[in-house]
Image (cartoon, rainbow, N blue to C red; front, side):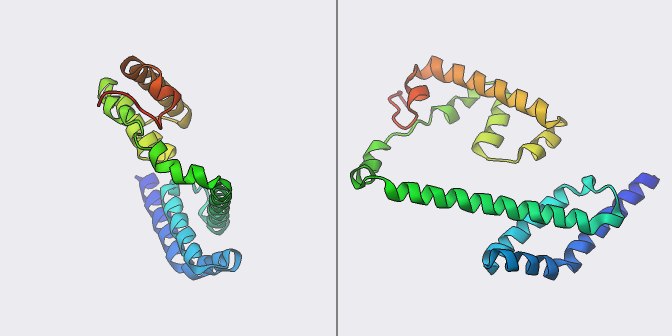
Length: 187
């Protein structure tokens, strides 16, 4: 009972710290990102991370340090994401115009076999692939939902993907495994 009360007090303290510190957190982000819209996006992601990781706070006395560590981590993830997008934009700009003009024809028939063939997998394997690969859900949250640690989830996901690969190969032959952007399978 005492542990439950401490957990509730900790949760309330975290929520209060997020509300009270919103202005300081936003100011910290705006100063570094130099863009209020990006700062607000990062702040929202930060709040979600804090609330999903509230059980990781070990010492309420050090909550400020814990919050700023998560804030810096969230901001760094934002930097990495924007860097990837910039590199992608540069790479697309370098593509020869004839390839860009021909892209709709080249991608006229992307493979949809994997999503259709999920029904041939075990339900748990199909669920893993649907939520992680197709739905892009967070692996940590998925592992927690299933009562697993991240390593056990990774092993199960690896096995589920291998099972899907076998089903695709049996149904499609090698066409979808070699070039999923040019599917010749019967629908």
